[in-house]
Length: 244
Image 1: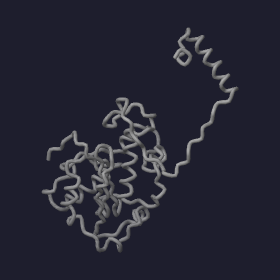
Image 2 (image 1 turned 180 degrees about the vertical axis):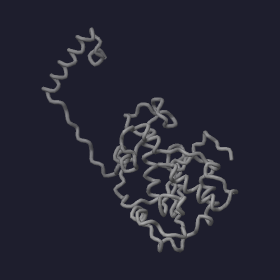
Image 3 (image 1 turned 45 degrees about the vertical axis):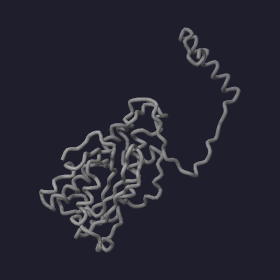
Image 4 (image 1 turned 120 degrees about the vertical axis):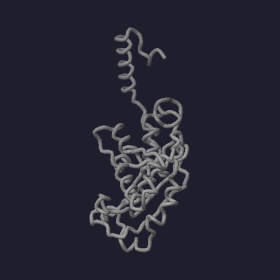
């Protein structure tokens, strides 16, 4: 299938699974996805719990808290594969640590037969973890760390959930690719960070207190003036703060 590389439709996607390795028979138990068009969340979400026909590993269960009993009456991947692929078709999938989720999705498709192909046949993939590591080398770049770095509230995230994590990642991605963390500079129309002039409004808490204005004291103003005079002298009269 041919993918339109210039599409503005993006799907932020996350999955929860019974374990870490599809090669060991682990399955997807939840898919959550959030649609972004024109750098705005549209509200057109996709969310589905799945019956995996096996139990979750204890470690995985401690992460997502989705029990075998809860999943007993949920559809299987084969029951929803058509609507899921129709939802993501032609979009750019944004996934944090994409090889993990893509590996599980392709494993599920492979179980259904070669006619379903791979997820890459339906859409392109962008790994937001790779992007975060390029922007913040040597730092933690998991979702919680990025929320702290970009002032995104994730206090309601006690357990991992595919839809909740997709919603949080959507906020992180929009902030990371064009938020106000760079004082509004270096943002172009597609959020890639190469131009100036496109403003992006970041989501702030509604109960955020008013900023306190602290004015400089007379002593600080005097010290500042003296520093400018030194700069003016050593720069042969080219101190821009005095000449503007």
